Length: 100
Image (cartoon, rainbow, N blue to C red; front, side, top):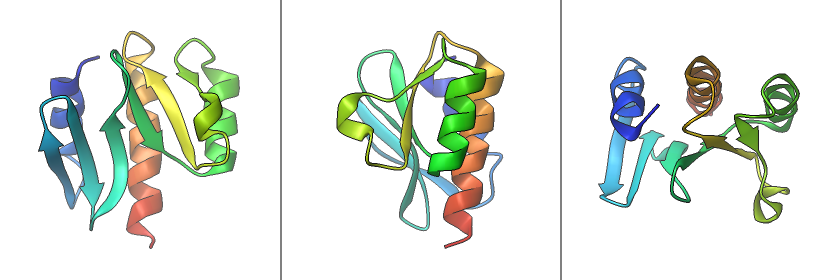
């Protein structure tokens, strides 16, 4: 998966908008983060802790939590990982942000 594929997928999610610039692009719902570019080859997805644990358990080769994000409702996704799992994480993030 790449950032253009993420952009195409997030465009299917009502109210999800791309912001940022090359090197630090992100997608938001009503100015609440859904997913953003992180370290090279990764994105950071904002999911609640329960969803994060489910994603980590089900897809350990795709998702991880760098130490600096352990206290935050975020999971790091490897873009070389399972594209369907990444889309699922993004959808979960979108749903969480729409509820606020």
